[in-house]
Length: 279
Figure: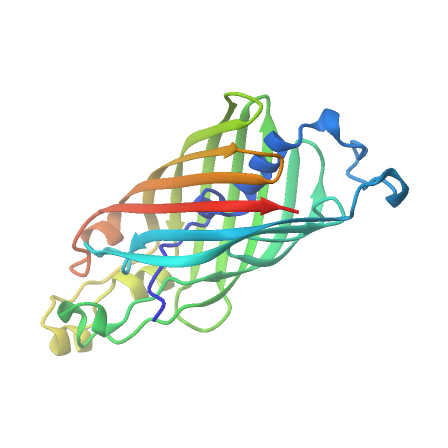
């Protein structure tokens, strides 16, 4: 069974999401080697460029078994980076289908349908019996980013659209993009994630009924900061076609997420490693 993948929101940009895939692609294909205009219009087919960009390969994600868990789960996942019309339409990371509605060399604003595997089952741990299951499901993602020199700031919001009770998450991240060499890229920076009361109640709250069934003390929650985190990413182009990448996010649960009786460990670790072939 697929276990939980901690919500990355902006950190999803780190764990095989759109942002770092874009950085890796940029490092492997610097602007001087393309024929696209600065306005983002793809070069005509006669120039030899395809409107499609496809990069696929195997990947593996290591993440908490459920939010606040002490144990980790290992989940094999495909690593996908597919875009069309100069990145206007894309399917990247956990973003199943996305659109950049506004875009330039320095900013992007868009929407995507993302599938977040975050879940929690009573069978995950004896302590969870009586709390009920929290199911994974798709989310509507709104995002924007702006780059200046080697820095990029990004914001993203993920809203549950499947009725799983996972509410709304909003995050902001800052990353320093450091191309060490023409083949090697390193990115690092801090971030923060905010959660609304629906999310915190579902993932970290314990109602009176749940308390009676599980033995955990009742715990009321509200909206607030879910976590603060540090993102790190590196990729290396072995050849023009093969790229290896590792993304890591280390976070600390705050406020209701950190104080919940459900939480066994406040430190969260998420790692995604992939080997991609660019067609």
